[in-house]
Image (tube, rainbow, N blue to C red; front, side, top):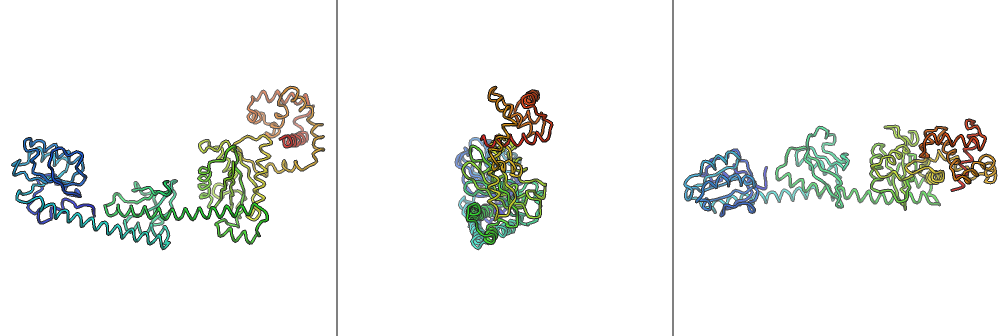
Length: 508
C-alpha cells in the first residue's frame, strides 16, 4: 500500500472525477499522486515535484499546441504522475502528437470537463492525501513505540529482528562488515539463497557497524518508514551492546593487570571473576607480545583477533601498552595446547601469518609467545613471551618473526650459568675466530652462528645473511682454517653453538 500518495487509478474513483476521462497513457494509471499543482508557465524544470498531478487549461501554450508533446516527455522525465487538462477553452482538442507521446512514455492525460473548477478537484484530492499521510505518521509512531519499548525492556536484538520481519512479512538479517550474521529472522534462513536483498547501513559513533538486509524486491511507503525506525532501533541495540562490550573489555583489562602483578589472587577468585567476564578458566592461555619501534595498529590487531576468535570459538583479549600489543590467547582444554580444532593451526602459526601478510602492515614487528598456562598462572606465560622477545632480539633475529619460548628456553637458561666458565670455554673454542673478525673487520663469527642455526644449510645461511651461497662456502673454509674444527662433527657443532649463543646473549 502506498501511503505517501494515491494512485491515479484510485483518484479516478472520486465522485468529482467521475466525468473525467483518461484519454491516453493508461499503462500509467498506477503512478502515485503525491501533490496537485496548476501549470501557469510552459517551463517546468526547477519547480515540478515527483508525483505531482499537473492541472492546466493549456493557456500558456495556446499559441503553439505542439509544445504539449514536449511537455509530456518533460513531465515524465521529472517523475510527474499525470497531466489533467481542460482543452475545450484554449486548445479545442488535444493534439495527436501529445496523445502518442503519452502512450509512449506511460504518462496519463486526463481530460477534465470545463465546468469542474480546479478547487473542486484539489480539495478532495488533498484531503485524501493528507488522510493517508496522517495514517502514515500514526503507523510510524506505532512502529517506533513498539520497537523502542522492546529496547527499553531489554527484549534483545533477536526480538527486535523478529518484530521487524513480522512487520515487513519478509526475512530480515543484521550482518557485520565482514558479512557475518549478527541476527536473523527466521534464525535459520539461508541468506546465501537471497539473490539481491535490499540493504541499509547501520551507523554507531559515525561508523558503519552493520547492514540491515531484507529479502524483498521492494518496499511500499509504509514499510520504508518502518525500515527507518528499525535502523534507529538496531543502532540503539548495537550501541548498547558496544557499551557493554567496552565495559567488559575494561574490566577484563583490570583483571589481567591483577593477574600479572603480585600479590596474585587465589585460584578460586580467578575462576569466579573469569567466568563473570567471559574468560573461560578451563581453557589454557598463551600470551603473545607483539613489539616494534611503534605500537602496532590497534584496529588491525583487533580485527584479525576477532576473525580468528570466531573461527576458534573462543574469547581472547588484547591490551595495548607503549610500543607493544599483548594478546591473551585461549585454547580449550582437551585440545593440543595452542592448536585450533578446525585447521590444526597453533596460535604461533596464526601470528606468523599476520606478520607475513604485507597488506596488514605488521611485517616490521617481532612477536614472542609464552607457554600455555591456566589463568591463575598467566603471569608465567607473559614473562616467557617477553623473555622470548628479548632473546630473539639479542640473537639478531629479524623483525617479522615469531619466537616461542620453548624454542629459546635453553638459551635463556644459559644466561644464569657460570659466566667465567663459559667465557673461558668460548675463548678456547672461538677466541681465534673473534680475533680474526676484529683484525679484519669480517663476519666469520656471525656466519658460523647462522650456519649452525640453519642446521648446516648453505642456502638458508646465505638467505639469513643476505649474501651469496658461494660467499658462505668461502667463509666456512676460512673458519676451518682458523679454528681447525671439523664442521661436520656433531659434538663440535653443539659446543660451538652454545658458545656462540652465550656470546651474543652477553654481548647484547
